[in-house]
Image (cartoon, helix red, strand yellow):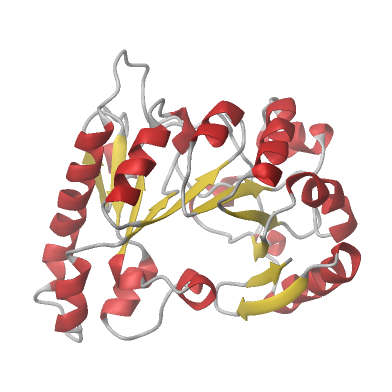
Length: 289
């Protein structure tokens, strides 16, 4: 079981190693107060999005990560993907039950939220550590979900096997040295394999660049990464000074939106991608090939 449940407020634990949490934008959408940039960019409905992870464990210790790390002790067995699928929906519904008495909630949206049709497999930990991630994604796919899978790229075999609607490689570093410094980990050779696999995938692919002021905001550094992965989209997104990252980085490390836009404009000129959209409140710019 999870070591530090007090560190997971708002999470619903599913089985031995999975979790679900309603995000800020789902809550705002239920009150007609806005929606996630993924709705703006990709057309998914924020109030019907299930945010989950099948692996409450990570093989990185990134300086910018806001999540609590090292939550789960070693264990010997994994839950079946069918169980995770069914119980994740039940967990989402339990979380939603608290909104029935909340002032300002759009009742029609709340009813729709009980039947999620989008899953963001990105909540916490590294989802490809779960050995049956391809089967889990396929179950969501078969049940009418739009599947977004976010990975750090360290399990290329899993990336090759999985078929989400949209595959994200979330990255902060641009070479092996910077990777060791920013992620406190090795495995850059595996990430390079993942980039090559991404360049050959039929699914939609995204490189998400987490931008940290004073560390990685020179776009030319990422050209080799972009050329290797050949993503359909690039998201240039500001590091946000939240959670546990505040123990490692100062607030000055969080770029303003205009700084992210300046980065994206320079990257567009260097890479041949075009700026297609932006969300100022989330400090993110979308570039498309």
